[in-house]
Image 1 (cartoon, rainbow, N blue to C red):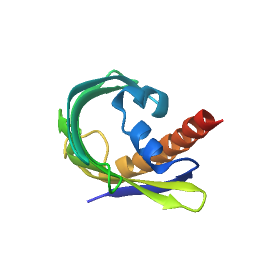
Image 2: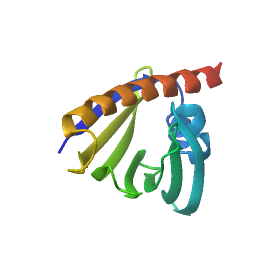
Image 3: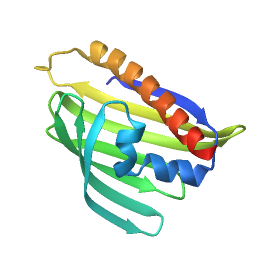
Length: 148
């Protein structure tokens, strides 16, 4: 199972960074190439929330996912649901931890490509790492600029 994992330190408040980066409506500002987010359902009970949403990439491909948020542990887990292709499965975890200069945000993506996908697991892993680095850097720029 391929795993892409990267971290970045973002200056700011842990609760604020967790809330903003998990606000689906803000994703076009945060993710490079993310468009037309649509929150389908949102349920919150105490420290937990479950979101279902639809998202499009810059090529117009849309998919639905769910996201589970733990506001106490500052962890978000997600799974792509439909369409699953080009993946066989795809799970995401975002962890947020206090760091000396702010918040360490770690993004983890576990996946496997469908055998009929146009790219291999290794090619998809390289793309995921590149995409992850670009987005984490963009998150940092946007969130730190908001503080100024």
